[in-house]
Image (cartoon, rainbow, N blue to C red; front, side):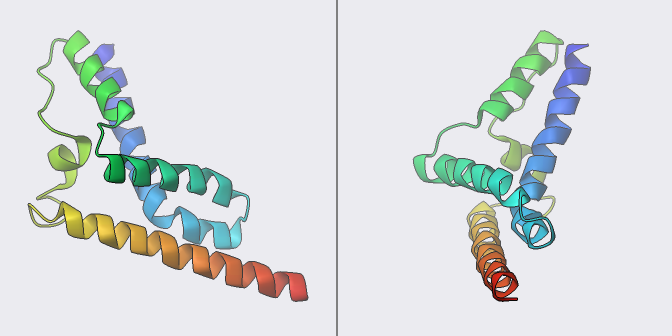
Length: 119
């Protein structure tokens, strides 16, 4: 059961990362999404700036350990994404692209919001 839960946590963690990338754009259509995205964005920003381990990764590793598996070394991104989605060693570029997408999506969100209020 612990391995199944670890897999669920892994999928949810991946979904949170995808939401980080596209959630601001989803808010263009569904404005209330911006609040959840703001939380996820600030969460990711604090992890990157303060360089601390993500508790979601710790939960997954703990569940894997309880299930009898050896947890992977490093973080979620290094284990599942680095070298798979983009070339190994370019996490710093992926972080910059992710935060650029966040800023672009927020600029678009506020421009659209302002236009909607005028009409």
